[in-house]
Length: 202
Image (cartoon, rainbow, N blue to C red):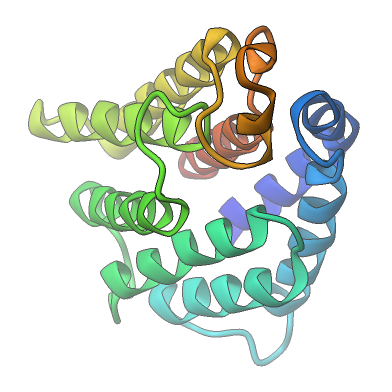
């Protein structure tokens, strides 16, 4: 999938940035872990026997991330892709409604897995506005390209909003007030994920 290749390249390009963000409020391994995971994912995507439907591909991606990415991001991203795969099903192509359903299911699964809500200073703060923006675009009859660009913009705004939030989940929550003033690394990588999807469709 072109989407995953673009995301892998973005993770590589911003690996040090993600690690720096995580060093401030976490374990300083988000960039490294996600780079390793996406390299493993692309080995699956590029294999001669790669899954041939969106649903089976996303399931394979989720399983690979669960098995190769350490820290919190492995289970969270793995759950996102597994839930997205179930929503995609056996469809050979995905229209705007299907992509919305896929992302909505993925974000719901991730939020449940991490027990996170909007405002907790997590990747949910980037992904929830992204899904809402895409839903608005779909309801307005916009095409998928425009909808995903709106989703990417909303994710970026959500990412920036995490900077002044106090973390209520994960290792960052141990810092209390001191977590304010730092952008959440998960929200940063989640924004890259949505931006990669927008670029792939465009």
